[in-house]
Length: 293
Image (cartoon, rainbow, N blue to C red; front, side, top):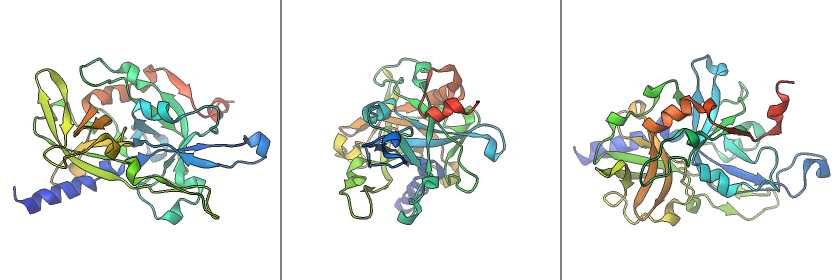
């Protein structure tokens, strides 16, 4: 394949709907509770992590549910129940927006329930398949609807096991902290930060002792260390196809560094996603408990 065509395929994949389904987690904290202050206010944002926005169901547009799929440790490492509000993290509604489109609560999606789908995963060597969770989100308003997400209907919605092979090009897209750092307070804002999606090209390596394999960056980017990808846990991993609409989710990144990325493949993820209600769960926003009153 000529270099020009190869570069075009990579560019198409990196701009596909799957790549744009990535969302950055924005954790937030309060210095005073709503009861103490008398009104809702976020004192600051913090933390890092990436997730993949999913729309699940076979119904009409507004009948489906939205979820954010991520590595379990993204939430475990960032949440402190003593100082966050009822919505401890927010998910940007749009995959990419001008700065002035993040000026309303309607520009974000909010968590309802955390489903521990890692309980439904098998045990394998080299990667902890339990390090995954699915966060059910409150339904968006019709006038503030997400622009890019992965529609989940059945196992064909993601890359199948037979679609993986040694030497396969796989892309990893997410939000590394070094490109998404926070800035000092200003007179106008309590917090400001970048929302910059970053993509790394890798190659799948497999052997007889490693059922899943791993993504190697040695032949593509090289010298990818943990500090370069810190914050990309939960990133979307996807394949390369001639056309962007042919690209499918290949998995979720859980650990990376020393020029490799370990991931949970899509063919194992999909069964846990489709059966998420069999997993234990935890209510995030107490508003959920009032919905059926």
